[in-house]
Structure formats: structure tokens, C-alpha cells
Length: 122
Image 1 (cartoon, rainbow, N blue to C red):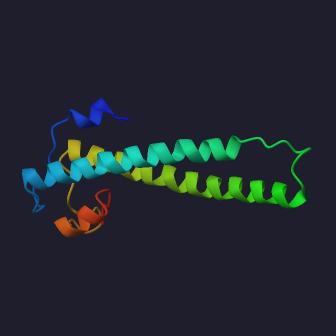
Image 2: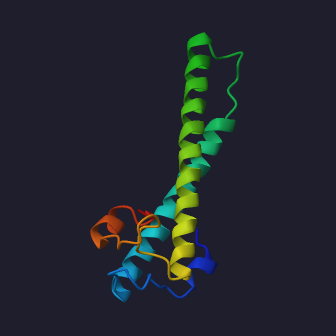
């Protein structure tokens, strides 16, 4: 699962960041990997949510379990969509030379922090 638009764009860090070209390539790859992981997970959660169990065979305990699993999947799917939006914004910042600095303070975001959360903007 790839998005050619973001993968073929020139990568640019904010002029005030301390990121090298190599750093940007590493961070870009981390963003791609996390995005793809979330997309695969989301597909599984969507299947869990829409899974239909035969109510005539399921007793009340089983039915309750299936509902709880679907609810858990809905919460995780919402979380994944939020992270996917953050990742999309990070790709945009990479394309527009706004990546690597806090959107609140303008201070450089350390490479070590970006390795842990490459979508962060703080």
C-alpha cells in the first residue's frame, strides 16, 4: 500500500531544523511504514466491526463478546484514522519545507524524537 504522490515528492525540512537529507529519508520511510501498518490494521478493524455472527447459534455471552470486540475495533479504528491524518499532515510538511520544527514555537524537533514519532509537529 503506497501513495505515489507523497513518495515521489522532494523532501524538504524547515530551514531552521537540524535535519540532514539522510535524516529526512529515514523519517520519510518511517512515515510510509507506519501509514501502511495503520492501513492494514484498519482493514482488519473494519472487518471486525462488520462481522456478522449467526445470532441463532450465539448465546448471550458470545453475543456480548462479539459486541465488545466490535466496540474495541471501532475505538481503535478511530484512533488509526486520527494517526493517519497526522501522518498525512507530516507528508505535507515534508513537501512544503515545514517539517522538523514545532508548529507552536518554531523550535527544531530533535531527530531522536522524530524517529519515535515521525508525524509529530511539537
